[in-house]
Amino acid sequence: MATLPGQPLPQSPACSPVAELCSCLGLFAVGLAINSALVQCANAQFWLTGEEASVAFKDVVFLRLRLQHCRYDTNLGGHILYFLAHAVHPDPGLWYGRETKAVLMALASPLTYLFARRLGLGFAASTFSGLCIFLFPGFSSFSWIGMEAGLELLFGGLALYLAYGRSIWTWPLAAASLGFGILVYGGGAAFVVPVLGLIGWHVWCDRDRRSLICALAAVGVFLAVLSLPSLWWVNTSHAYRGGGTLELARAPVLFLRLLYECFYKPHSYYFFSTSPALGGVLLLPLLVQGVYASSRKAFTWWPLWLLALGSIGLYSIATPTGVRRAIPLVFVASLLLGEVLEWAVQSRRLSKVAVVMVSLAVVLLLGNQTLATARALSDQRLVLPRDFDWIGADMKLLQNNQFVDPPTRDAVLALKNPIRAMCMFYLLQDGPRRASDPLFSPEEIREYYLTTDPEKFK
Image 1 (cartoon, one colour):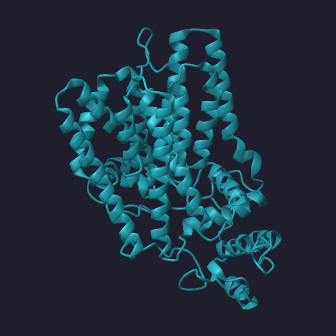
Image 2 (cartoon, one colour):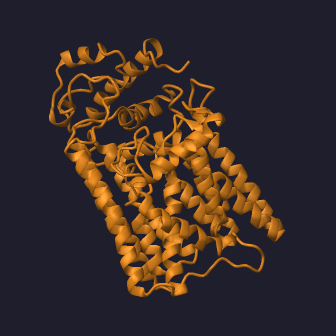
Image 3 (cartoon, one colour):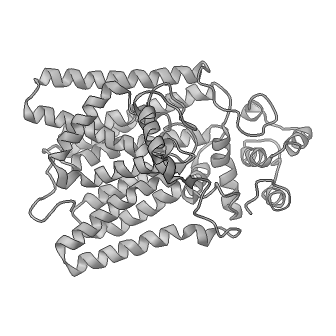
């Protein structure tokens, strides 16, 4: 459906369903192991960042209250995901947000594999793409941290995968996934043009009434999903703007900064890595070759080019900027590496031994970068920011204590901005595993927010 009439979507080389399933499960298992290891390394610092405290605790409480805390809390989809994660987690402790993120982001690897297969890549090239995505620093640095950034890739990627398919009846589902991905995190906006463009292109080429009806239904579903914040929040008419701004005048400078972060050195908000997002200049020739190889299949690859341009655009015009806004670019880069491998095998420019050696070198390079970041987190050379009000040097108080004494409550309320701490104490003591009653009640949190909170949405 991503092609002109008479130019069918490439057929992937035949592979047994068992091999496909095993590859997806294996990639998920490896991704989960790497993400979980990163979680453990970060946990060694015994500190939850301000973004994580907000997303995994404050947002969960405020979703129940139907209150949008402030203008930065526009990610209703993220609120819903972490609310569900807290509800189903067998023991939602201090690090449950990171554990949730590790599991969900491990799904990106089999998704990348299946997407590569849909593009017509072979089993080996598709598996290679699935391996690369969770090793790229621009992905692995967000695959463990308990915030929304990165999760939009799962929903946007699923939407694009469905739009690439041959059935028009999946379009409403693709539209729902696309809309929810945007609600999860603003980076999901990069998928809008590719997904809707694919659907529109098919309608234009097909000229079938059923296609038009399905396309209109998809647009309706998309708009309905995007309207959910207006229907849920009871205290704001600014549910979509968020905390960022658009600055077109700085776009050229920010584009150069993106290149700097992708190929030289990390340099943006919450990008906790020791290596550049796309692995450094050593991988630049392979990525350029991937663009060339994909240009030979332009009728198939144009939506992915638009996705890459959309991610670059979001980084370049939205401030405060950062790699967290361009994670779909890593997805495209992983597919480009798979395309390079497929091109090298089919063109026979290199021997099979040489292709295998280059592929192993890429995996080892990216794997070593991921390992370096894990070690830096573990030994605190990469220090997590102390970016919200807390009552002590670390958070061990919340880890094992079965009882929190009343003076702790007074210490929390004495903080300049205690709302995150209040929500953390409430959720961590809201269950039978704690001997004490909840230190703060939802009603008390609501009352504090409405009457005292300095960050209250205005």
